[in-house]
Length: 78
Image 1: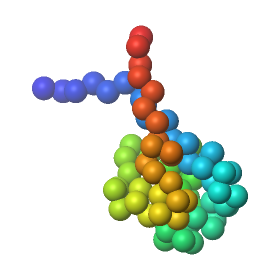
Image 2 (image 1 turned 45 degrees about the vertical axis):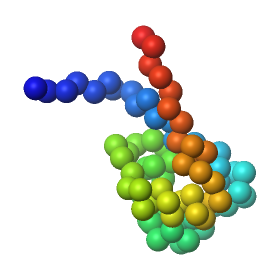
Image 3 (image 1 turned 90 degrees about the horizontal axis):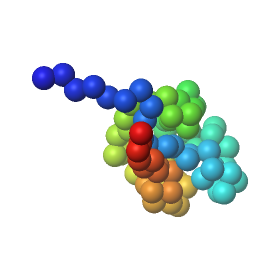
Image 4 (image 1 turned 180 degrees about the vertical axis):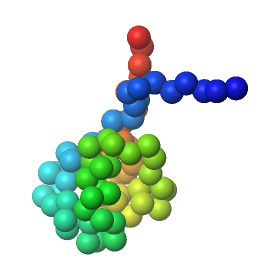
């Protein structure tokens, strides 16, 4: 049985807001967590289909935040 997923994601990535709050550049976060700037940029713009818990943990550690600070569920009521 095929599962149809909606075109828009119900998860909004707020990494850019947390970077501003922490006064940190994407390049600095990239160096601290060991993830390429390209991959972090894709995550920041919401152009990824998933994220590893280890990656999320490293980002949260360096930004001193919780997963809910950078990921938000937006329900689709339509």
